[in-house]
Image (cartoon, rainbow, N blue to C red; front, side, top):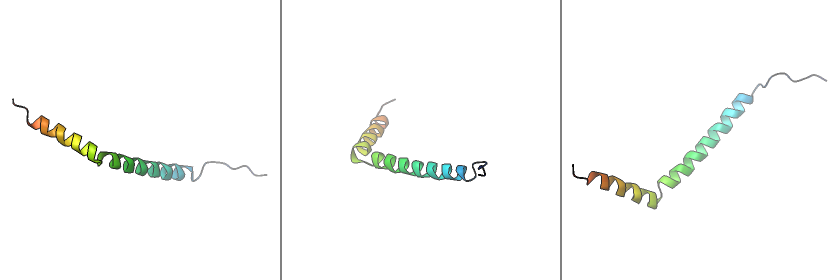
Length: 54
């Protein structure tokens, strides 16, 4: 019985899985950041920072 040598194609699979995971994480992050609560909080933070007198 011949033995298989090497991991040909393994790096391509790893890159594909990593790309899918990164895209899924980006989609979740976008959903969180674009939610009304986060947008309101960030808007309030920026407005408070701009309203500071120096």
